[in-house]
Image (cartoon, rainbow, N blue to C red; front, side, top):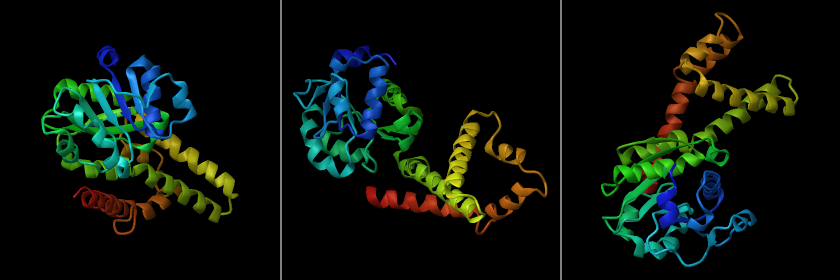
Length: 270
């Protein structure tokens, strides 16, 4: 993206843990000047100290963007320091899970442009996917800025209704944990069939990683890819008969799991 406006006016990064560091690394590698970045983090890493950004100092009067990447439980003490930047042209982008736009506008003012974003942990290797939505005060340009900044950690999709964010969280935000558990379960199942545990885990990791990449890259949809490796009466078909069972297989299980995650997200945001 074009960092010229941000380089001129400044960017504040509130919190620089794993997610914040992944974004900052992408921005700096993409051409954003370290001198334009002001980071607030009580426990800066050695890497952060080496970047040349302004660290825990005075903030610019009117930054172009404030990106909030602190943990939700730290929000209460972190946000008040930014109150003076509300009700103006400063764009606030939040990647803090479960914190609604309403929470920010109550503190910063209704006229404050706020974009809520839900990334996921593959962002740490630039392979994340982030959903974003804005409040009525955000402009098309604001959403473009947020989109461009968040592309530093992977793909970006836009949603029109913040109410969909709990479902997004349940699918892509929490989703990596489901996949990691599937790897564990697949490896354990292989070990139960006589494979050494380390070999079973290596096979499971590579299979899930490779299949995921193929699903992203292929022109065919996942259903077609599944059919392509399923010979009638073969080994894959035998396994899929179990996994696709309407009552006990993946479809019913994942529907219940995603619903549980979405319901919990609604409870936490209430």
